[in-house]
Image (cartoon, rainbow, N blue to C red):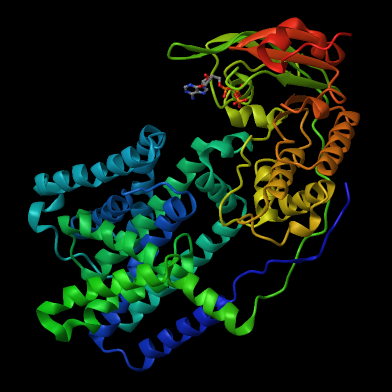
Length: 578
Ligand SMILES: Nc1ncnc2c1ncn2[C@@H]1O[C@H](COP(=O)(O)OP(=O)(O)OP(=O)(O)O)[C@@H](O)[C@H]1O
């Protein structure tokens, strides 16, 4: 394919400088001007920023609306409160335990509820805080009941008491800086990008080799650590713990901070927390009317800045100073999966009364293209979904590269060397082209940078190297197809399943695609090609299977398809005499 490329990529946002300036201004204000009350509000803002970091990971990056963040906050608070006030333990013991306890809660709960669909998951996680609230109120011997526990000792670090006011604000914001750095590193690395890929397209994520369950659990666990840390510091700031820390307003505040600040961004959590904690103070002179103005201000923020204040700042900074040039990594070829075929015997799948796939057997041999044809609704996409692990077969056996993989999950099949493309190019909204293709390597490469280098290689191979810098949004259909194909090719799979890759392409583009597919078979890839365009398919395929109502009605050489009476009757129309 004709190759076009450029080395400059869509640049990272410019808002970092503005945000750093804002942070310095805040620090100066705290050191020079803030009253003891002002310092206290600032400290609480830091506490909420820490809690919101965790929420940014699980919800902002991972897309799981976890309403357990308030519960983790409460658990951290109670661990510090109980151990400090009842047993006299100091910060050095209570702080790590306040992180550990929510983590130990998150792991079993996460295993139980993370597979639920989004709204059920949100409800189940909300339930955790409700149960804990009940326990906190009804176990007065341990928790102090509805009144809670007073007299939680202040922080003593390495023998030095951290006094209220500036020292406590410095400690909390020091931990915010540390937590923000950890969160930022996680977000921009392989973990964060895998979570984003999962959030943008949970269905495709498995076929890209990402272990959806493990990723979600890790994100949930990380959110628990941040929540617990925040809860512990909240108790040290207030010196009391009560069931209020487990009530819904805590969760609502964390959610609002993340959305207003900017979903998925650690800077957004800090900005959102500072703003949200200060807004009520700024509007307090309005007395009763303050809640109306406060609500109105929040609504306005969400309307004016749908991607949060950090998004707004980025856009404004980008307009003022342009986008920062960003060098792409040099293209490098990813390793190839060893050649291996796919053998399928008696595959079956029904949806209610519809036998979508009924006793299909086929063999994909390394270095060959097998065509799969048939009328609309005959079961072609279902075959690909079954073979790629998106559906579980009711019957049949599948062997991939010599290993039995019947009913295996999509990510396991992907890691065993199988890749697929989708009929409607499944590119994540708002993502860059390079990022979208690199997402297909995250489960295989050492880091995100290496995944991008491999993605560049695939884009070059598809002849769209110059798209690397662009956004997936608004790409013309033919280019979207190539990018989608690059996501499969970048894996250099042993077996490649392609669902109508030539749909909507011009004759010239189809010729380029043929050359690419021949190149892949030359490297030993076994390809299953679902296609309606016989002029494109038949010269490429050695063997062709035709499906009708889920059953194989033709299985033979491509050259014989047009002459077959059954295929003519079910699909192609008039048979052509040999
Ligand atoms: N998830 C599902 N739930 C219920 N029915 C389904 C589901 N997926 C597919 N089907 C049904 O199974 C049959 C086969 O559908 P499938 O999409 O595999 O056909 P196809 O040959 O790929 O069609 P097309 O050429 O239009 O893409 C159809 O009757 C379809 O309605």
